[in-house]
Length: 80
Image (tube, rainbow, N blue to C red; front, side, top):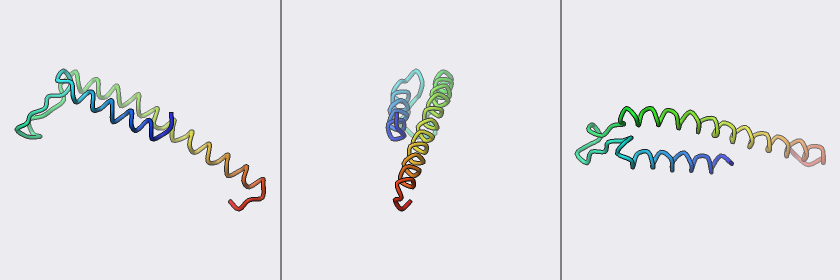
């Protein structure tokens, strides 16, 4: 999964957690009355721990690909 896809998955998963009243209580009165439930806080932390790893993995994969392209281009004599 590339970095942008991972970001999209994170936002989509977060939106799904927020839309579930079991995890997030939304109050139309104001932000001060909206909050994560205890179960929501636990789920959010677990989700973010998993997704943080995927995001860093995507970042390192992209970096590795760019480094390989630079090396190949350098070996071909192209300007790096």
